[in-house]
Length: 105
Image (tube, rainbow, N blue to C red; front, side, top):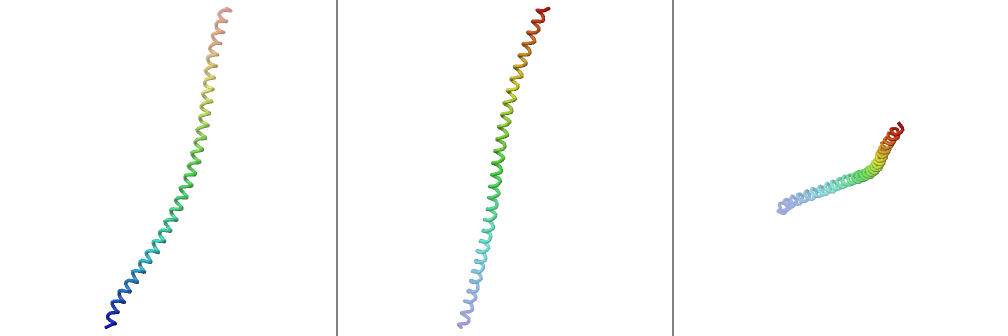
């Protein structure tokens, strides 16, 4: 009779051991997946840092180019003002020469 009582007990104990093993396996797999996820996250964060650094360098370069273009535009505007002044001076000289030529004739 004690064998019959121990038989269901052993069966239940075996099931509990199997469940504990399954839980241990699940915990181990979860830890492994967590480690893989952390590694991927670290890689992604490093790529993000590199991309951000590259973006910052490109932004700085664009700022320098913009500053240079602004200086060139200012210089061109200065040359344009000089050209307008020279055109006015030339027009005045032509008028003066015309007046002098008409007086000389």
